[in-house]
Length: 231
Image 1: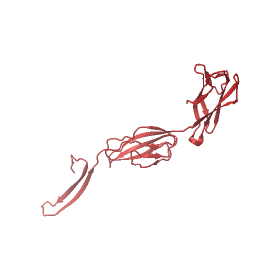
Image 2: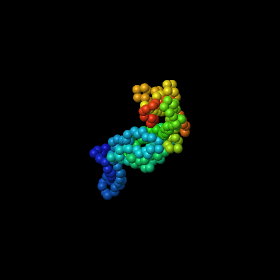
Image 3: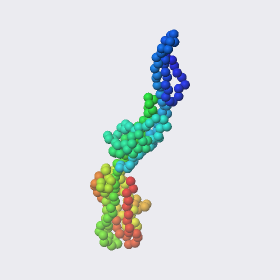
Image 4: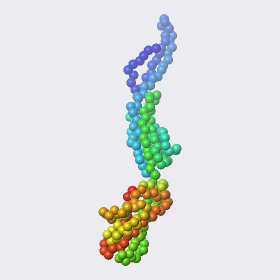
């Protein structure tokens, strides 16, 4: 047995020959093959991502300079589909709401595997619609008007979960004066900017939440009332 030094990446063949002591031409030989692989330096699975539900998911690993890479799902969604499991930038489908962890594994022959993990977090969608109405429709100066702001969590246009922490703001124009104590659902009237705000509302998927307040019609001013979802 002997030690061989100085071998670099590549394939080598060594032949061992045994001959008779008197060198009468009788010999036997055998050849062995040694292949030297370069050790993968590292693996980079790319940045973590947070995406809305149903958005396309594309992983972003760095292509290996040595060896071959392959994606493996470590935890999360029970079943995912890779467009190309060996592509560092493969598309992935089938992810559920929550966090799925993938590992990018770089191998080269018998060398130690280089790995890195990436987390993909899918956020559930809510699709909130705001509808503004008032009653009665025909009023005079001094009349009392009830404004109704309806917030709808629409499941047919992308909503998938109950909406929580919803905020709504209504800007009351100077053509009206708020009726004290008339704001529903814990809303707050701000005299500084004449706005009514609701916060931390919950709207069940497929449900309609009505927010109301009352105002008196002034003799002059702007009468165009607007509202928006702010959170």
